[in-house]
Structures are given as C-alpha cells and as structure tokens.
Length: 111
Length: 113
Image 1 (cartoon, rainbow over the protein chains, first blue to last red):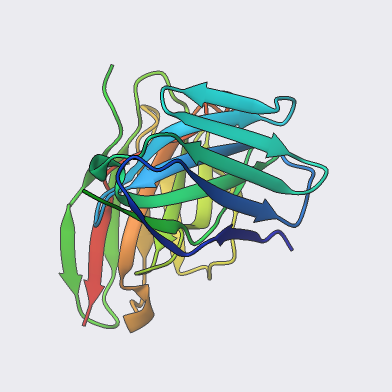
Image 2: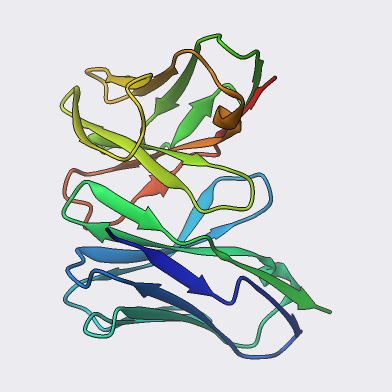
C-alpha cells in the first residue's frame, strides 16, 4: 500500500528564513511527484512537478528535489515571506492513474 | 486558456440524499480525476475518467460514481449520503499521460446534515 507522509505537520518561522518541507513515500516506483500550495478553503495551486527521471526542479524561490531510492522529496523555500503562509501538499503519482497525497505541512510566516 | 471550473461552490444536503457535482476540465486536457478532502487531511483519490470511462479508482464504495462527457467535462455522483461524506471535493484535469501534472479546480464544499 502506497503511503505518503509529510513532516512537519505545521511550521512557524519569521519572515526571511529559508526552510525545508519534507515528503516521504513508501513505494519508490513513482511516475512523478508534484508539490502544491493550498490556501484555506481553496483548491490546489501547482508549484513544481518532478518526473521520475529528474532529481530537482526550480521555480523562483522554490526548489524541489527527488530521491527515489530513499523515497523522499524536499521542498526548499528561500527567503520566506508572509504571503507564503499556506498548506503545502505533495502528491506522488504511480502509473497514469493513481495519485497519493500527504496530509500537508501548514506553514505560517510571521512578519 | 480556460482553467478548471467546478460547480456548485457550496452545497448542503441531508443524510440519505443524492448529490451531483460538476467539473469542466482545462482546455486541451482529456482526463479528469476526482478527490475528496476531509478537513485537515490531504486529498484522497476517488477515481479518474478518460475517454468517457472510469480509468482507475481509489478506495471508495460504489455509491460514488461518475461520468465524463465528450467535451471532457465530468460529474461526480454520490448516492445515499452519509455524514462522513462532508468534505471538499476537488477535480483535477490533465492529459492521460500527466507529463505536465494535474491542474485543480477550486472545489465544491459539501456539508451533509
């Protein structure tokens, strides 16, 4: 059974800090992994997508890495801002039609 | 390019009733996946539709069913509603080979009383 775990469940940091969110998965035979942001009561906004053959992806202040052999992905956020406050979710894709989410990390960036 | 849209935004039903939720996929996408997100949890995969047929299903009972139409839009139907069905229902569109990932709509908040 595929399981996706995100640690920590919640994180509070002062503005300007660099931070790392973690995602681990039990089955390493993944197709891709996608990081999302979710604001309260809203849908999911895609941040970064990593294919199984890739090691990392970058977009602005965000960098996501993937280590399939250890079943881990990290999302690095540089120079955090209050506007980054949200819940961050990772979704692991298997084949074309099976996707498993973690429970998310709730981030609060204090001004 | 039109994004993923869902309707209605909010819905209140009573236990035992039936509900239909709707999703329009992003332009160019031929696959729709539905998810249930309980409060404080990550989304759980319900099923996926491609070419108007179910193309994968998560651990949900048969009272959760769906349709996909020739224009790739989709419906999620839930019969015999239970209190635990209260959740945010999300749809995501993609190509059948999700090389560009999935794109989500804003969701429908269902409350079952």
